[in-house]
Image (cartoon, rainbow, N blue to C red; front, side):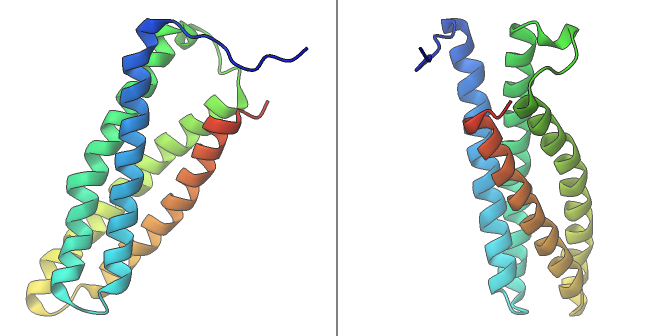
Amino acid sequence: MTVLAEIRPDEWNFPLFLHILGAMILVGGMLTGASALAAARGDARLLRLGYWSLVAVGLPGWVAMWVGANWIYAREDLDEEPIASVWVGIGFVVAELGLLLFLISLVVGGIGVYRLRAGKGTGLLKATMVISIVLLVAYAVAIWAMTAKPD
């Protein structure tokens, strides 16, 4: 006999909601930013829109996703033992390494936005777009891992 569903305690509902909401906001902000940067074709307004979508939507989404994930992880008392599930490990790797790449893309993009005033910086914003697309692929893998729970 297989288990169709597992009941989780009610006190996990809000941290799980925060985690999923943050992940949705993060992916939405990343998709919007990458799309605007890809469609800009040198248009400074779209380049700025793409960059600021990453900063104003993506970054707070990452924070909410991370806070919710760690809150649940602590509630389950899993922070005292090594990572036991493959899907949890994938989530941690994508979140932590993704933050590093995300911050690099924001710094590079910030320099690019600053240089737009002088008519330069589009190459730096293209690099931000490429990093954002790589992160979107990684987030798709993490979403698959969170929903399929491969072990």
